[in-house]
Length: 373
Image (tube, rainbow, N blue to C red):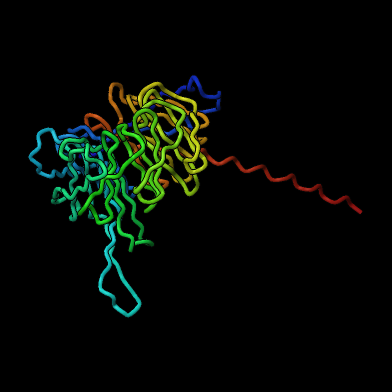
């Protein structure tokens, strides 16, 4: 589908809780409405400024090769009625090849391998860029005998892989209702259920490395693992609101979590402590994203987009699509973010133009001519 090239010029106002800052329309970009698809979209992952994946209702898994301007729809063909995908991931996937020389090993990497999770406890996998899908069923539930796969809704999947650490393979973590956590170290051939300190519904998992990952959930739950998901510890969030998304950005310890009632939490020490930031809306928030440099950040949710240029010290509301829940927000590195939501809504951020350069100062006056001798 082709972009409508229609640009929404968003109204801006100072948040009631925020400090009075000097924001100008020239500093804040606009959101361009892309042609919508025909299904609700629940998750989004951008692997480059152009390539990305989304997943949603009606067994729909979509990919774009042009930054969301057009999408190709894939379906698993599963027979379950009303199959809704809640999470999608296509990590860098590396496989070693035959040793060409003693002491040397080569490997191949691609983004052709992906996973989706959703209703009825389904996990589906593709090895050919979404052309065909198969259900993964190797669940080991001994740690959670109360969970019945095929019934419990899975809400998100996170992954981590690295070309520099390709021998470790691809780390996969899945979360769901009733405090469910599944992890796999063999590309989903087997999944092991892990015990957690709480039984709340989990909504989002963010995998930072092969060992470190974070979960956000109901009742203000934030969990952390440092051993790849074997064990989890709870961190104090300071809120009882449901937290829908948690992510870290940049190379330091800056992270954010967002949730119901407009709650925005920030950490600057890698997640050890969390503090509430000034709210810009009381709407339920669903996703958060910052540029890698942390120069700009956004949160999205029920009919709202909020914007910050000072790492959340102040937030602005940008009026967007009335009556539509925006469900996911992502961008690649310093690239411009894309938003997806209900009814196939898609918005692409268009940065404000750079201000014109300041005029050069006038040249100094010429020195007076020398006096006659």
